[in-house]
Length: 350
Image (cartoon, rainbow, N blue to C red):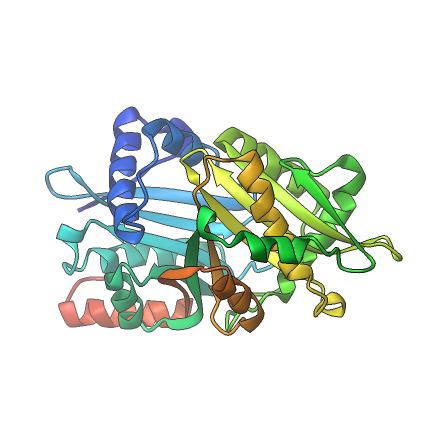
């Protein structure tokens, strides 16, 4: 068993194709109705990471040298949440239940220890139950579960859309920003990003995030390189001139038929006025006109977020899977690995 590090912008074609092949199998299990991205789209995304993330990647190779899985280790490039590391381990189905994922843990623990991280976070999906079983086995806590739901854009009733966008909520104005935030509104975009901290986080041990104007511009540059289009629907409170809510949707080059609904957030002092309906349905109407190739809209909603769940249900969204974010302390994960090592009589460092 070999863990072969893959450095995106230095990767060989063989490495890129092997990572891509593993990704396609795992993604087809997670979202079986989605076609895989092309190798060129994958290469562009893999080699142009999100500027807020610092990531390392490994291929897992079997004894014959064939790629049987991948490992990713990521941390935030920010002053907040320096205690946190995110990991992803994906094993091809025919190689599971052989302890391969467990073999990756000592390497990840060493990385986290070197950076003084104390908490490991990972995601699992109900369409791939082996991941759920693994997280339970290592003693992780299911800290936030979200419903991943989708609807066919053409099936969303026109009368509901017309009802909620024909009557402008009194005292508010809606702005549409395509791809790049306007220079005049960059500080407003920063303030709107702060509303993300009001979204339910379950029992996740994470602190609020702050975003700088420079980070937003770096993010836009990365989106452009990766072929990601973004529409931002921003709500201005007219009398104060403040921006108090927003919704963002994304279209990627790899899945042009899918519109990914990002965060919809309304400031707590402006809720109950129909602003959530207004921005979400204006987004749907806009995409129908500007991106007719989109056939599906997909989003995640934290279980327990009744307001957004009601909107989605009314629009005909249906559940396609559950996504769970798990967390485990580095000390507990280390204890698990040490106990497994002792039970297997494996010398330390092996």
